[in-house]
Each structure stands twice: as structure tokens, then as C-alpha cells.
Amino acid sequence: MTVRSTPLNAVTAHKQYSEMTDMPSAHSVKAQDKYPTRLFRAPTYVTQPRREAVVKGRHLAGPLTEAQLDEFERKGFLFIPNLISGDELDALRQEMSGLMNNDAYRDRAFSVTEPESHEIRSLFAIHKLSDRFGKLASDERLAGAARQIIGDDPYVHQSRINYKPGFAGKGFDWHSDFETWHAEDGMPNMHAISASLILTDNHEFNGPLMLIPGSHLQFVPCLGETPKDNHKNSLKAQEVGVPSSEALTKLVDEHGIEAPKGKAGGLLLFDCNTLHASNANLSPDPRSNVFFVFNRPDNRCIKPFAAPKPRPDFLAHGLEGR
Ligand code: 6CS
Ligand code: FE
Image 1 (cartoon, rainbow, N blue to C red):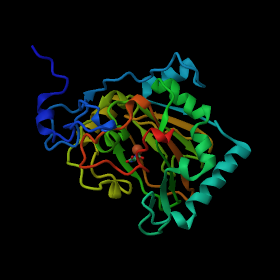
Image 2 (cartoon, helix red, strand yellow; image 1 turned 45 degrees about the horizontal axis):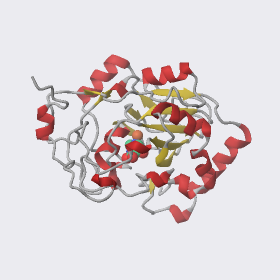
Image 3 (cartoon, rainbow, N blue to C red; image 1 turned 90 degrees about the horizontal axis):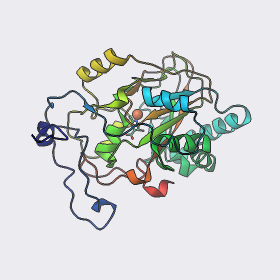
């Protein structure tokens, strides 16, 4: 009896973006699509099991304790309160507002503005725009934690500042970042994590990140072909790559929802495949986080598995993102 690695109907239903042609570049790596998504019709399975281990670098040096690694392994995320404080935190917050108020960055491809206020809501590639955030990206408290989880010294796949002004900050639907990075950037395996440093207090009313503990162990295939230049809309509101209500209901019934909260300076580490979302910010307090996505060099993006063409570098840096 042949044991299929991916249910047949997902493969037949899945437009073969991942057909590799031999190109003399990183793209010449032939990659089997282990996580078919952006399907034409619903597969018979609601979720498929994750194929990679979660924590791969317990033998490597880094700041996380065994207990912290165990918690990340089990839940798919770990919140470390008050990691950064005092002058260091003030300097980062000052750097952030300088970047977010820089008119030179408004209306640029690498910034996303709120439709009404024209305020910058997300700014990408901040580890390249700012020395201070560039240094933070290689700070052992973040990059070392990533090393212990992904199992090698990481490079930065993506960095961004998300800013949710009081009363106006929009929410984000449930999604797996890996689903997007696999489909649209060509990330083959689940060997990446996000490190989100909260720069404003995150409380229950200003739209903190909500996560489904344990959801990192199940990949949810999504319906709908990726439109051309999808990132031009998905960074404002994600329509494609959103899990079905059936899958979300199943996972929330099994695991519940958690929303880590804490003072500015806390660090939230979450797996590339942990389902997360956030509500709108209806409080007067802004909510702002800086994110670094750490990927493993042997897991660098190749050719998109389910999109017409790769996204721009500011969303998916190559190994030069080190
Ligand atoms: O498309 C992306 O890469 C971004 N989108 C979301 C909704 N979260 C992660 C990531 O920054
Ligand atoms: Fe996300």
C-alpha cells in the first residue's frame, strides 16, 4: 500500500506552482510541496499534521531555559515579560516614533498606511532602515532564543513595526504566517519564528495578539488562488490564506485562545505556524510592536509554492538579511 505524504486530492486540486524548472540559482533547488495551500476546492482533510520538530536547538547556546523551551514546544509561543526596560526601552520607542513619523517613508512600497488617517500602520525592513533596530535584530536575547528554537544561527526573513493608534487601529483575521511565507515567499519548511517586542503596554482593550496554543502542530490548508501582487492588499487586510471557520472552530475547541499581555518591553516569541489574530484597538492607548522573523539558512525561500511570482525583498529578505 503506498502511503501518500499528502492526500491525493490536495495535490490534484493544487495548481502546480511548485513545478520546478532547473534554474541556475537558489531556485534550482527542487522542492516537494509539503504543505499544499491556496487550493481550488476544499480538500477532504481540515488540517494536516506538522512535519518538522518545533524546538531543534536544545544543544545550542542561548538565553532560554529548558522550561521555556518546553513551553514553546507545547504551546507554539512563549511570552517573556519585561525583557527590556529603562533607557534601552525609551531609546527603542524614540527610534520607532522617528521611523513611523518620517514623511520620506509614507507612500513607499515598504510602508502600509491607514486608509483614513494616512498614518503609517506597518513599516517593513526596519533592521535595514535603522542601525538601532539592526543591532536589536542580532541581539543575543532575540537571535539567541531563535537559534535555540530553529536549530541554527538565524537570518532575518522579515522585520516590521506594527502600530495600532488608539480608537483607529484595525484588527487582523486569524492566519498562520507560515501559510503566507510558504505560498507567497517560497519558504519550504517550518523552521522560522517571529520575535515580537512590545513597545507599548499590551492590555486586553488595545488589540493584543491572540494565539491558539497548540495550533502550530497542525497546518491548515487555505482555499483560493493567490491574486497577482496580493501583498498590496494582504498587508492591510488578509483575504486569501485565511483558515476555514471549520478548522478554526476545531482548533479553538481543542486548545482555546490566549492573549499574552504585559508592560512595554515584553518579548513574545511565536512559531511560524501558530495561528494568531488581533482585534481592533478601541481603547485610547496605542499598541505598537516591533517584529523580527528569524529563519534557518537551510530553509531559505526558493520559488513561491502557490503564487504567480515572489514578493518584494522588503517582505522576504534572502540570506543577505543576516
Ligand atoms: O504577509 C506577511 O508576511 C505578514 N502578514 C501577516 C498577516 N502577518 C505576518 C507577516 O508580517
Ligand atoms: Fe501574522
